[in-house]
Amino acid sequence: MKRIKTISVLITAAILSLASLAEGAETVAVVLKVQGSVLVTSSGETSPKSVQRGSRLAEGDKLVTGLKSFVAFRFIDDASLVRIGASSTCTIQGQKEANRIMKNIVVEAGTILTRITQQKGTFQVATPTSVASVKGTEFMTAYQQTRGSDYYCNQGSVEVSNNAGVVMMNAGYAVHVASKDAEPILRKMQPGEMPSIEEDLEEDELELEFENDAGQKKYLRFKVKKTE
Image 1 (cartoon, rainbow, N blue to C red):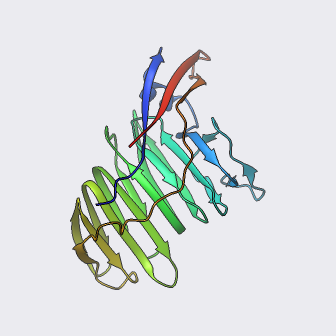
Image 2 (tube, rainbow, N blue to C red; image 1 turned 45 degrees about the vertical axis):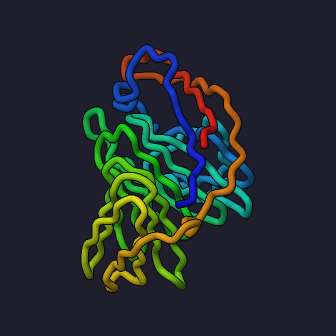
């Protein structure tokens, strides 16, 4: 199986927990890395804005990446990490419930890699053909209108479902779903088959300021490092 580069995110200093900050803020995710052209259109707006390192993402934000571009972000309630590859369009849905965020990434086109290690709340990836429900895992989603959806599981397990059926995909397996009414097809993944997301990641730190309902400002420092 092809090895995948991942981003390790460590909270090195915090006054309040991420979950507490999530309750009093509109933000549901924070951008860690950007390469190339990445635009975001917020819910209710028509004009896109450029995405930068440290940008905060909210419910309903639509991300569009250009050629040879990618963006990596993490949700603020746990260690859920998402990387969106080149020529992709995805919308973030993150409903807050208590100290958790119910996460759903809607993929209109392209590829995304999700890595969930300390899951709080639900995490789903939806395409026009199917929905992948996650429980502590690392997997890739690729969608093309002419082909349908392909899912590749590198770690853990993922449930893939649509109108025609449900399959459980474990590490080392892939699922193809041609349409919303076509049964998901489970098979063994071939060596080197999983798509890669081009990236240029260097170790650094990112400090962000948050404000809770009482107007108190708190700081979180993230350490981002590249690992193999």
